[in-house]
Amino acid sequence: MSDHIVSAYSDELDKLSSDIMRMGGIVETMIADSCRALSINDPVLAREVIARDPQVDVIEAEVEKQIVSLIARRQPMGHDLRMILSALKTSNELERIGDLSKNIAKRALRLDDFVSAEMRNAILRMSRPVARQLNEVLDAYASSNSALAKNVWSSDDDIDQHYNAVFREMVTYLIEDPRRISAGAHMLFIAKNLERIGDHCTNIAEFVYYQAVGEYLSTMERPKLDQV
Amino acid sequence: MSDHIVSAYSDELDKLSSDIMRMGGIVETMIADSCRALSINDPVLAREVIARDPQVDVIEAEVEKQIVSLIARRQPMGHDLRMILSALKTSNELERIGDLSKNIAKRALRLDDFVSAEMRNAILRMSRPVARQLNEVLDAYASSNSALAKNVWSSDDDIDQHYNAVFREMVTYLIEDPRRISAGAHMLFIAKNLERIGDHCTNIAEFVYYQAVGEYLSTMERPKLDQV
Image (cartoon, rainbow over all chains, first blue to last red):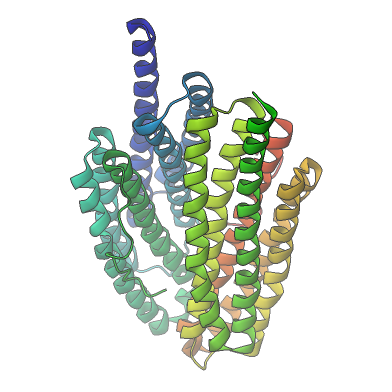
């Protein structure tokens, strides 16, 4: 292959990575802002989060088109093929994280007056390690850093423990005042959404590790701590 | 290409399809049996469902290996490439459906005595249209039937309406007797899991349609009815 063609190919791979990072950036703001909107009861911010979701979907569709075209024209193998399939799966995970954040924002808009400040704070507390996971896994993706990816992958247990604590706390609030049930159900789903965002980060960490090292992180080593 | 090579390639594509159908078959039993275990309170059946999940994971990993090898060796384009990428994404959706069914079975094992027969029945009722969706979308996949795929895709609203009804019903049961809160939270997550299984069927329907027709089913035409 001439240098010119190699360089165009490498530009295409770079474009793919940078699109993934752009998706990651938007999704990061969606998690943080949906939980902030919830904690300070800011419907304007919640609606902004919801309005951001179609951007993520557009980039995902664009990434998929690039990948189909790359495979058809460049016939990638080995490391390049791993990298391209990992980009496809990562964009899929990010799209789901965007969806879950949008869902948190939608629920924030539907909460009634029976939500206590403690309930709102419990969610905000839980959102911080989740946002950190996404931030770190995006760093790992950008730098193909397998050690960092493994680190994200092993610390998912923290989020599971947070989730279990929030779950118990919510049930206590509900029992204290049954009028909180509708709001409480929303809050449980919000906590579950955050826990699932953590799982999606773990999935991305697995792709990054596989892409960098060529081996799977065995799921045997990491016991899941969320109870159901 | 010689006939011999073409036929080996076509055998490989058939193997891919048949692995997807095998995954689909296992996952179908997991949905039906997890909801039956829940409705008749059968812990043995629930444990059987949980034990089936690793089989699904193994086939998914196998499908992914086949796809990487197919792309690297066969350099597929056009319809074949669409078909292969659609198999990758379908196996991913089926793996998630298996996970969600396993989660229903795990929750069925953790329910306490405060679950009423009405609550169990509400879930069983909701599971039927979901199981039908999966059955139809697998038929559509096997026969590359775009009309059937579109049909599955448009009838997801029924499941969303079921989910909204179950949600309201659960909240009523919880308000009647606050001791039901812990069981009720599990039941809400179970209903949500079924609704998400319906969403995964819709995703598969989109892949089947795209693969058969080469165009995307516009998400504009299908309003989501689940409230959050």
